[in-house]
Each structure stands twice: as C-alpha cells, then as structure tokens.
Image 1: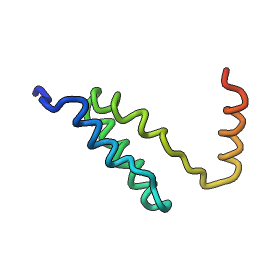
Image 2: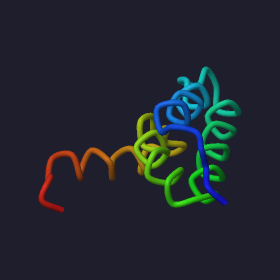
Image 3: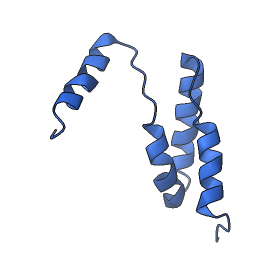
Image 4: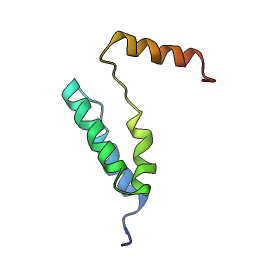
Length: 76
C-alpha cells in the first residue's frame, strides 16, 4: 500500500504529539505514542526518531548523572 501523505504533513502530526510534557504521565504517554508510531513503518520511524529524544526525563538522580557523564565525553 502506498502512503500518499507527504512527509511534511506526517511530521506536523508527530510534532503535535511531541509537545513538551507538563507532568510524568504526559511524558510517558508522549513517549509511548511516538514509540508506537515509529514502529508502524520505516518512514515514520525516520521522522519520529529525533522527536523521541527531544525531551528526556530522569526518574533517578543516578540516571541523570549518566547522561551528564556522556555529555562530558562526546566520543562515547
């Protein structure tokens, strides 16, 4: 089946889903929605993947420290 929607339109829909979360529940829903859409088709995956990493939340301080560690060592 051929998907006739242009990438620009699909990206607008994905960006609407990827609005910044106001609380942990919204963040989880946003992440789940983008993740599911990214598995629908390779094309959607390519469009959704950058949005999945646009906003990150850490539930534990140790997780945040790991992210900071990788920021200091970009070669990793």
